[in-house]
Image 1 (cartoon, rainbow, N blue to C red):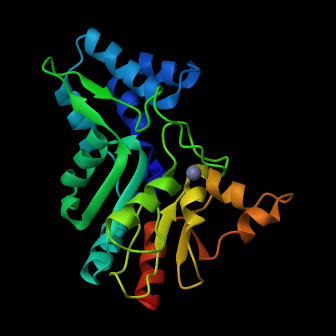
Image 2 (image 1 turned 120 degrees about the vertical axis):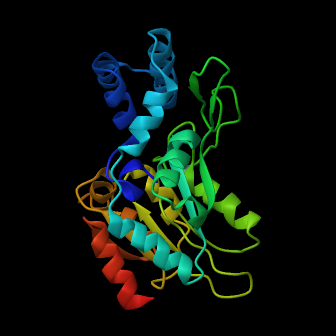
Length: 249
Ligand SMILES: [Zn+2]
């Protein structure tokens, strides 16, 4: 999930803005790598006496369209395997999914690790640490700490499949059965996993008005969109995804 795929906001920003206007300013001005910046903001928040309860409270206020919940329930009920691949973090995603009662629908959550320490401070780490082996993805859209495409590859291997899958909501078939992939994304880093799609039977749901749509439609680089084999469906509201799935699944 880039943040505006499953939920209707950017969870990293939402939480920090909920906690502190000062830290909100820091988010907009610091040159620090994004995941490190999240961690730094939470460190400052804790040092200033901020509580974990308020962080947990903020997660319950993150908007998630009820139609998106229906999308997840529909896919799950039809036997699709759902996974999240996100540049947010484990604590936020788990908290949001649990609040909306849909944690059980997801088989995997691939994202930056996060944990509470004994002092009640929330720590967020990069999925690929700064001193770890770089992912080396050639797509040019992936951030330093995560290549969503490679994470999708690993997920598929783990699931015993031999083809594709993707981001905010993704799905896998069962081994030995032709696999269809549905991928919902909004950010440029949702492009890489979509390169794993194989046919027009797959659907790539691209959110309107976000960086992924702009990237796919750059006038001087039509090959970017042509590299995607899935059928591309642009969406604004989750109800559009629901309608599409109800008519095609
Ligand atoms: Zn990549």
